[in-house]
Length: 130
Image (cartoon, rainbow, N blue to C red; front, side, top):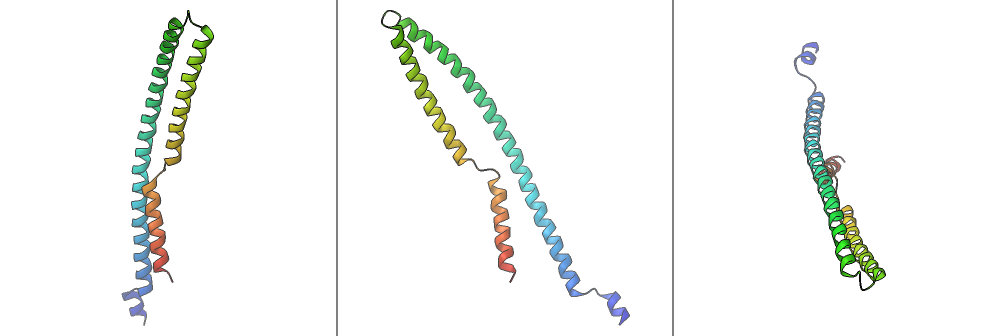
């Protein structure tokens, strides 16, 4: 009896070892996927920051130039009218840019592939457990 206990391990022990190994493999794969998505997210954020900075700088330059053009063109007509035209242009531009920013924020998904894989893992585990 003692030799059989030492010679071959219990089938339940083997199954639990295999299950633990498979769980570790799945966790490792999910961690690798998460790290890849984290790198992509970092790159996307840096690109968005630099593009936003460039848009801000050139937007300010364009606004200054537009203000000068309207002020020179309307100096004999009406200074108040020129300011109202500029205010309308700036307000319209602000509304369009805000709408685009709101759309980007609404559609932004953080780590979508990792979340999808974890959801699939949960569903698979739920099906396999009674």
